[in-house]
Length: 251
Image (cartoon, rainbow, N blue to C red; front, side):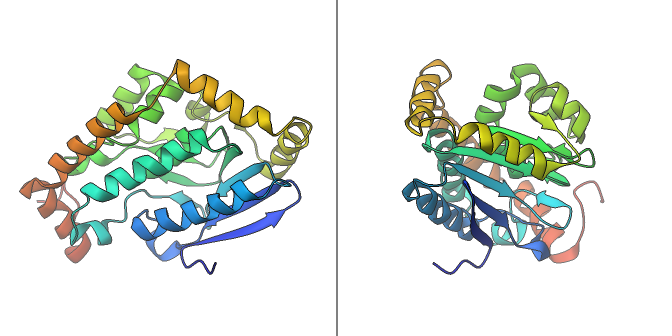
């Protein structure tokens, strides 16, 4: 399959998926979601590569929702599709590693939170800016709460303040803080390829029973995201940003 928003490259023991939309700061929309699913299909069929690595480029992992696509479209279906993508990370019988070197915001935080492992360099930052637009990170939060706990996810949502890589590591959003991400990755892949691949699917099924992000969570997330995105005030803020470059706090 020819991809337009990502690249998918097989390497020893892993499939490396790179978000490859620098002009839109690796913004997430239906096209990106569809191509990520297609890449995960490839990974699921490849028994020789039990690890999937997701990374960005040029100092940006992902800036979250692609506002240009959202400005002129109903985003409620996109919310459901994005939730399904995050949930697939948690059910895929492969180990998903987020390799972060740079900025992560909004839905990009969801990609990290839903991954099995997250490695980051010290220049990386993590932010949930949705409240500035009158939104909430509805689809991200079930996965973020599962990873870092209720209170930290709650305060990150309301403060909208970027979290440093050191702080992200402290609260367990990041599993390993390293200036040698490829070395850390190869060490992890070395250990994981010693396991029976069936263990990955078994572990994910068992842990889902402990912290399930199921259909009820999806229904609540999509309903709230749809309600907020249909607000005239939110639509105006997004449109003003896309078409005039005006941020919500600029009156």
